[in-house]
Image 1 (cartoon, rainbow, N blue to C red):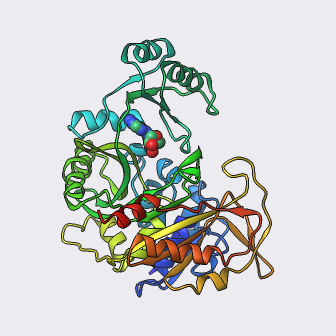
Image 2 (image 1 turned 135 degrees about the vertical axis):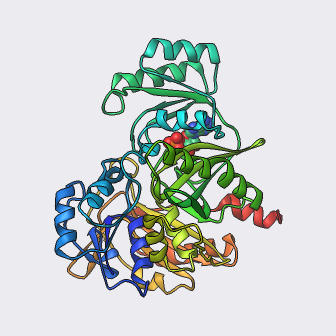
Length: 427
Ligand code: AMP
């Protein structure tokens, strides 16, 4: 098969690495890709927001399957457009992608189908939203509707903070004024991510993961796209996994089918594991980044037939096999991230780092220049490792990190701390 991946981050490098290893893959392309992806696939300078250009390329190269990495093209309907042009594509269509694109849509769907999630109200104006905040009290969570690249959520400890968030969101503080906000109860517990593959009718579980969103050690400092992750998430016991499938994922897939927006693709459920069980915080309509990197390291089965089965509605009797080992990834980012950062500095020592046992390095934001690897983004590298425990994977990943010479970069030194502490405690 000829396969085209859309995207350019560490997630897409991990997907390219796994797809390139499939005996079903003849020719692999990635648009636009990066310097690491170029080792697995032919990178092509396509604008992935230009659906007509993607379709023309897919036709020209006789692409049998397009795999869409990021959420923006999914929410913009790239899968619908490709399928309408007769090109098979993996990922949800535009209507199903509202699960990520609209928080109000998802919350209403949960309420209508009894899917456990925080109690909430939707508001189109600031005054009633603030009145609700005052009546309800803090802590309380304020969310802007629509894609906000992780910036549209404020967990407010005080009423004043919540009121200020309402004003910021309606006032255009996030770039453009929110047309709607959701205010919801604050959930207490441990967060985890759960991934399932869906085919429009049914779903099969992939695996669980935990990520570290804050930029600094000890989970301090501003939020980022993710500074590291590990899988499996120890908090996700067999019983909790079953409840997530039965109470959250499967009812969602059934509900979307009923409204004529069947969900095909990866469903990423952000969860809070509370005393009363798992609650849905949010859905994403694609693999997490960097969670995808650790999932691909743990996946033993060929990924390509799984993607095709999801696209074709054939997951019912499908089975995936996983390595028992844990996997962990450390993100190395440009100094300054998630604020302003420089580009173009050289990274050395990558080959030496990749020789550490169990290690795989995925590129998140790099470009090649005359045989040299240069930084080309905020999050630049994902240093991943497998191990018998999270502690072993962590030790291997940091051993590799220490072989990389890139003074302009930084990483957290404590990725996986919660799981490692659990392992040490024997629970
Ligand atoms: P979201 O973009 O909806 O995933 O929210 C970003 C982060 O805000 C989540 O990862 C949580 O840490 C936090 N958050 C969102 N909603 C809630 C909630 N209802 N209760 C507590 N924390 C929340």
